[in-house]
Length: 378
Image (tube, rainbow, N blue to C red; front, side, top):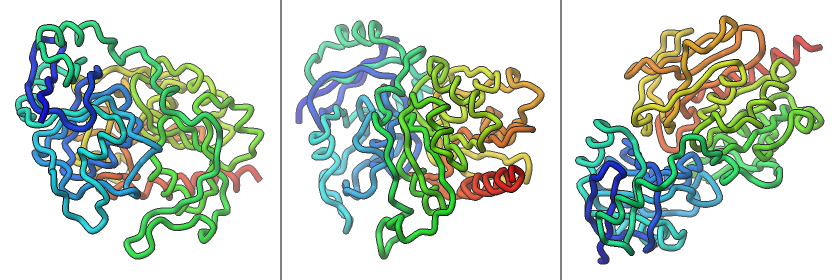
């Protein structure tokens, strides 16, 4: 197998074997602590611009199938694993991880000490790196990594958002029947979902909760949304820094108080900014399926799936915004709600894929908010 190198901007480098497509690409090097769900991670648009390292030592055991995807294609920059399974074994498997990465043109590297890499990131912080199976000179690659752009200040949303609006027609997956056909689900409510890099399992959960879901591009205006006369608006997850996404922040400001709003991940950050808050970059982010979160209203602790490198500054939030959820590992903000407007959001992923299902109740909370708003309106 061909040699490959992962080099970091601070001068550290790791030598391994090429995985997937041959090539060279830069990105922010991050790590995910999930033990499973690598296919959903590969196809999560929130990883745009990132080189994703899996902490679990062997990845690819169950292969790749055509159902467990979260978007139309993988959007991450590169994939890093300790060992890629060459002979997957699962009744749903259609191909190996290596074959899939080759088909999708995703550069990868295996055979490096991922434990050492993750410890380095935890100590020194997430940083720009480069994976190459073409240039095998560490000094050259380190210099390229230092010159590569940071994700801070970049609008990565436009690289992953849909270009035209569309109707979503699929419910949640069932072992016996696969994904439910939306035509078999009673859907009395209409929700417009902004695609900032939306995961498909969010759309499935909204559909199964009783919503007719219309997905719209990230740049859709508030006037266009209001013209559709929806019952509620969903603000999706997405990649990178929320601060440059000014067009979405302004749209959210114009929708506040006019319709119920529910945001997840990047949508949570954009809602917070629209309400006057600020965000900051975490040292190495939260990425995995095992983050403990406290719901302050109930005192209930949820184990959650997360994928973000930025967080909301609680000190920047005004008196009309309440912090509803906190991360029990580092006390960062995991959710907010407005005290007057029908609007709330969470930093984590209640739809899982991959991850635990502790937070699925949030979709029902959104539905209840919509019903209460409609009742009060008329």
